[in-house]
Image (tube, rainbow, N blue to C red):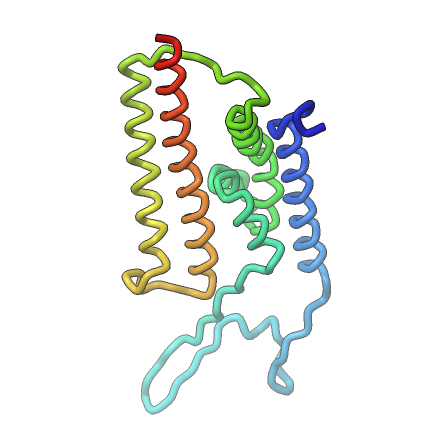
Length: 204
C-alpha cells in the first residue's frame, strides 16, 4: 500500500493533519479562562508593568515572556522549516501570535513533506531518480547549499552551548530541532550527490 501511494503523498497529508490538530489544541487552551494570583484589591490586568522605588532607586519590573505550550513546541519542532518560511507573513498581515503562525505555516507543510517523501521514495526505489546533466551553475548552487547547511548546523550547535549567553527555557529544544533539521538536510544533500554520481557512473 505504501509503495502504491508513496511517502510523497502519505507524509504531506498525515503531517499536515497533525500540525493543524496541534494548532487547534493550542487555540482551545488559549481560549480557556485562566486564573492568576494577584494581591488583594489589585486586578491582574493592571499588573503588566510594576513600578518600584526602594532606597532612592527607581526600577521597572517587566513581566516575563510567556513560554510556549507543549503542542506549539511539537508543531514547531516537527515542521521547523515551514514555520521559518511562514514567520514574516503574520507581521505583514498585522496578525501576530503563535496560533496565527501555526495556521499560516500549515500551508507550507505539504510542500516540505512532499519533498521529503519524494526523497524517501527515490531512496527506496519506489520511483526512478530523474537524471539531469549538471551544469556549472547547478554545481555552484549545490556547493553553496552544502556550505549553507553546514553553517546552519554549526550555528544550531552553538545555540545550546555556553557560548550563547542569552539562553532561555526554550533555547534547548529549539536548538535541538534546528540541529535535527539541518543535519537531515545536510545528510540528504550528501546522499543525493552520491546517488547522482553513481547513476552517471553506471550510464558511462
